[in-house]
Amino acid sequence: MKKAILTVCVLFLIQTVVYCQYDRIGNWLVDMSTGIEAHDKRLFNYGGSFDDLLRSRLLAKSPEYWGTYHTGLRIKRKVWQQRRFSSFLGLGVSYENATFHRPFDHTTLVSGSTTSDIQVLNRYKKVLTPLSLTAFYELGNHWLISGELASYFLVFRSVGNTEWSREGFSYTEPTFELDDIQLRLGVNYRISKWMIGIHSRVANFQKIDKIIFNRIIQDPRTGQKWEWHNPLRFDLTVGYTW
Image (tube, rainbow, N blue to C red; front, side, top):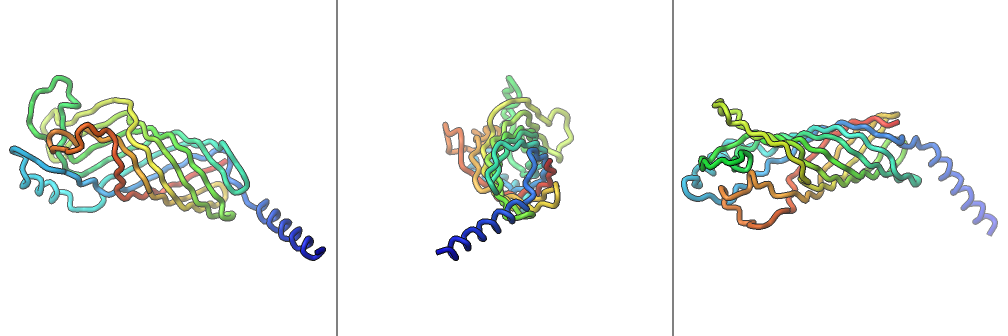
């Protein structure tokens, strides 16, 4: 019995010593990220002059798999720590640029516009403000796994086509609205106060964008405002903690 108690005490002491050697994440974390996402090539059906031939031409203009690019900067504050677990609340700014060729409804961006001409974009840029809750689990001194739930608020968007040069084609709109809610998982490696990670989005609940999913393409989701849609996306992050 004494040997069993002694063994348990020794194992507990070893675990405590090893854990105390972990260099925990600081109370603050700043990270920069860059990401790439698969094209959203959903075009649904066309009618009238915008027929299947033109639809095929649009798809031929963007044959590549990847085509939406992301960059971001965030600052996070630790709000909870329990042994190897820690969680952070974060706020930041994010930039997105989608390069898929698709028609869009410019009348939603130009107040009072009555023209019915169909225009095609190949640059859809967004500036967003993400609000995030990130949880880390420390596997040791260097490796961590993470999960993040983030809400993205759209504050500005710009629509244009680099193949057109005529004046007035570029449309911009300041706004403030919840754009999507994402869940991401990641693997991180820490060296001193620096951290590098690779993250993948595993779930995405987004607002249906009526600029690109609208009457022009005969979107069948009439009246639906939100959807689950998750094109493959990866992000590389570099952070600093203190």
